[in-house]
Image (cartoon, rainbow, N blue to C red; front, side, top):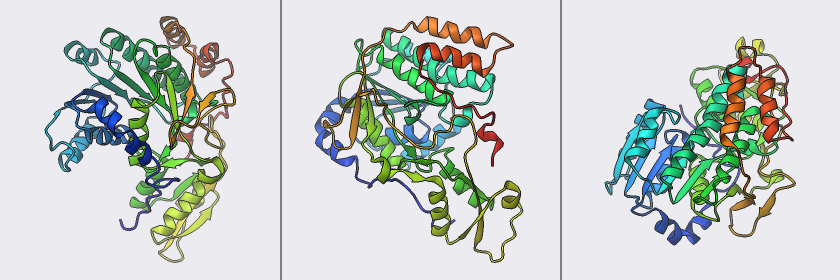
Length: 393
């Protein structure tokens, strides 16, 4: 395939570089010759974070991900470039964070830096009680377990990635990540913890833009909402955001990129049209899935794209990084803002028990989970449309 547009970012490619340059010495002191564990490291953000980390030459890097194929490709990528040429200890494990096997890593090793990218991150992950259970256990139970292990062997730095959807969440995925933030921050006086909310990562695994590439490869129509806009950063920029967020600022900080809503947010429909045009096609907008799948080209360069108004559960029309009541620090860094939080005492065992009671009931529904979430997040305003993204192309 030729001329795939890399709609890499809604900001310049060097947007985060000044903060890296100005804090190069600090980053080097924190990382060089240190032992690092990266969880969920085979994904787009985790793998790009690893590349940023390796530039500062840690002595050891252990990578955990349940995706064995992803770990294999990560290793091939790193070995086929110069990232591992200085010969650090490098080990990968196809292990689930919630498994007993994962615990053995902590029994046998100590880590200076632990970074967690394990997440169910798609709004489409919310369908019914079964899919929600998987989401809650990965995003919330996983954070609780990781903290329990870290309490026994504290790292110098613990970073756990969040999402913009944790801001004023309208879906269970976003609410689960907001709870994750609260869980992580509850330990900020025990060891250094931080997290980051940020934009969509262009062409990341499973993203809508990645779907555009796959549809074109398979000669299938494109499909996207007309009324939803998002911030975008490139894959490389996602790694830089998380690198900076791991080590800068203070324990308990939530980082976000300082992007302008009117300047940097882009509608998916505009990206889709731009994507087709940059690949040499004439976009033809259709209004139904049937029209899209049965489209007859008048010339070979025409390409159908279904553009629709969003009507599925949990979709927010725009992206935001902080709420009106958040305490912000905007002057410390060029590219990143910070949300400051008080330490909240959380009964983590009680939280798990509340969820477990729902999961163990054969009559439980999504609404029962929402009621548990509302105990911790009273302002959680779930958008329920009775339809999820799996019902669309």
